[in-house]
Image (cartoon, rainbow, N blue to C red; front, side, top):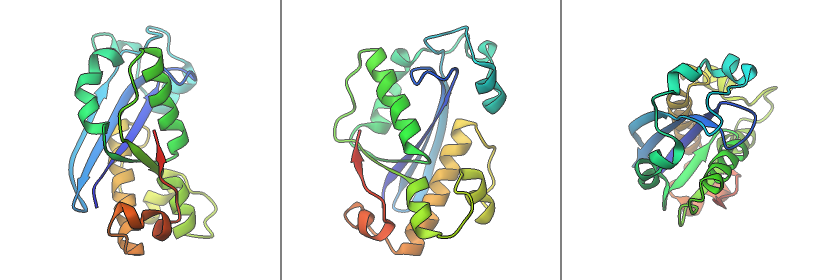
Length: 185
């Protein structure tokens, strides 16, 4: 099964303020690539102190980085026509949609997504928490929480465990076996 996991870190509470994106590519149930890019957000140099406390990314880290519009030609092939998975996809997909709208960039075509938070609740019932850190600790998946590449890689590893456990062989089986809907970006 093929998919791409995605994770954003934001500079402010505004959804169109990504300061980092991480992507992990899975082909034939194997992780083949993990990448991340720092992004100079629209609101630069303003960063919210709460956001910085979560991810540790500072304005000085992104001052010489491209903005999202400049980075889009590199990101688009990873996203267009792909099946994306994110942990708490409502957040990551809203960051993607809002940022694309802010920069007047069309949505990627034929892109679908699902949420590992949602399918984790269906697969590993009865847990007190379903955040990425708790699930990764349970499955002995090590990662540096709240950095985009590490979170995307951890989401991919967690998703592969769920896919293996449920015997999901294709996107066509995903909704029934994983208990999580597939939506369009």
